[in-house]
Length: 526
Ligand SMILES: *[C@@H]1O[C@H](CO)[C@@H](O)[C@H](O)[C@H]1NC(C)=O
Ligand SMILES: *[C@@H]1O[C@H](CO)[C@@H](O)[C@H](O)[C@H]1NC(C)=O
Ligand SMILES: *[C@@H]1O[C@H](CO)[C@@H](O)[C@H](O)[C@H]1NC(C)=O
Ligand SMILES: *[C@@H]1O[C@H](CO)[C@@H](O)[C@H](O)[C@H]1NC(C)=O
Ligand SMILES: *[C@@H]1O[C@H](CO)[C@@H](O)[C@H](O)[C@H]1NC(C)=O
Ligand SMILES: *[C@@H]1O[C@H](CO)[C@@H](O)[C@H](O)[C@H]1NC(C)=O
Ligand SMILES: *[C@@H]1O[C@H](CO)[C@@H](O)[C@H](O)[C@H]1NC(C)=O
Ligand SMILES: *[C@@H]1O[C@H](CO)[C@@H](O)[C@H](O)[C@H]1NC(C)=O
Ligand SMILES: *[C@@H]1O[C@H](CO)[C@@H](O)[C@H](O)[C@H]1NC(C)=O
Ligand SMILES: *[C@@H]1O[C@H](CO)[C@@H](O)[C@H](O)[C@H]1NC(C)=O
Image: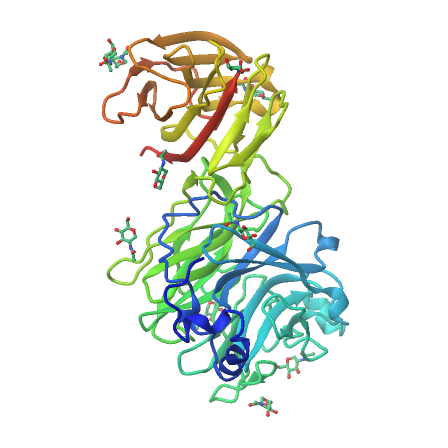
């Protein structure tokens, strides 16, 4: 990531100036925001595709450390395997570097399993990571079982983190019944006061952390905890301050269910009032995109009003509760400070060099790969190769670039977009749905597939398609009306009416050649 003319601030993390870095970091509460690259990270969503990283992860909280954006998630494997934390960092929110095992139960004598929802904080020149462990239940706490919210500390953002106090920081159900000590979020206000929000089992509490960050402070009235449970609260609190207003966000619904979701409330104080208030829903499942979207974090691009919501969600085809993936989308504020409901956008420009979220079907010889910001699909001619997303759009606009490479000189070579496709996971012989293709014979074709076979095909003869040329293909499917556009997105090259397939997955397909696809974007037409 290029820096502009390095000023001292920009240079914090350049080689040779690390000493200066250490001095500045030791005395600052927050890592200098100006150390981020000057390029404004102004995206509509994760334009290089959601999920942003490979693997099952959940509960992503965020930080800006050493000029990079960091995400600290729960490792979402089987319960007994949730014994370690990985982190991810990125200079541009596109290319993510994995930092494995930044904290494991080996580093925390009292933690055994269920290491959950890490919350990062920087202070006193140290990196703190707050985590839940052992999934402590109320009856266990009464019996003296050890578990709850711990705090670990490290000298570097990527760890290794070690237990800071040798015991839980919040290890019981405190003064309020029911707030399971999990799902902590740490927030440092502009006046330097630090707060820890937490709570599962439908109860949320807030406490103050003192400057050591490893001990609780008391409120002015002498209490250690305040209950702030909003109506509908389940877990996963997250505090954001913007333009003097405090936004408490949380997750509602069951974590394994489709309806897990995020709501928020605004207040003039970090303490609320939030108790018993009804929140505003901002993120929820979309039957075309994913289910169970919740447990959020926030990314703020310093010195701008650009915000993203990080969250996990369950792909439509996944039924295992732990099969959760990390995503982000843009979060927009209205004039009055309220938050617009979030739309989970489906895009992939392949700028991250990967194809997470896409699955390949068919006989793949040299494979399917991402190269030069394109998804390259090679078919040996005998069988088509399909690469599909786990979407389920009905009325939609589907855009992508399609490029049959020069090498694809067979007259049967074609490549294009699949939409409203069902049963691709059962194999190519089961595919049902529509295909808008570009043929090497120089024409556009529209095919209806039934059980993997072309049932009907319509050719458009008056559009010139050439191998080696990248074409912008757009499909607009609204009810029975299907329009295809090639390059010119104003006037369709073909309009057909068909009622056979109403909704289904999106994908790309290549037959008898090498095709490249780019700038994929699928959006619902409402
Ligand atoms: C972000 O991009 C949009 C659309 O291109 C533009 O209108 C807006 O001014 C940009 N914002 C910033 C802060 O660069
Ligand atoms: C992504 O980051 C890694 C690690 O910094 C780097 O090696 C790689 O070249 C980057 N890739 C891209 C596409 O920027
Ligand atoms: C439980 O909570 C009470 C009340 O805040 C506190 O005094 C006590 O130390 C806590 N016990 C443990 C084991 O954390
Ligand atoms: C933090 O709070 C504890 C308990 O009240 C106290 O003993 C300790 O001195 C405080 N530390 C700081 C740095 O304020
Ligand atoms: C909040 O709601 C709970 C449950 O309905 C009730 O017991 C409690 O008194 C309410 N608290 C306030 C401050 O309204
Ligand atoms: C296309 O033509 C070139 C040159 O005529 C040939 O080398 C290549 O094998 C052909 N490719 C295919 C896929 O038929
Ligand atoms: C897709 O496969 C499922 C499971 O085999 C089947 O029930 C369903 O009818 C199929 N859909 C279509 C459109 O054939
Ligand atoms: C191609 O033919 C169709 C149907 O006759 C017509 O609507 C369309 O305008 C033609 N397109 C071009 C580029 O000539
Ligand atoms: C599609 O159906 C609409 C409404 O019934 C009709 O107006 C239109 O002419 C039809 N288009 C084609 C291409 O058959
Ligand atoms: C893909 O999208 C990027 C960003 O909007 C744009 O710069 C590029 O020209 C697009 N490429 C094609 C082939 O449309």
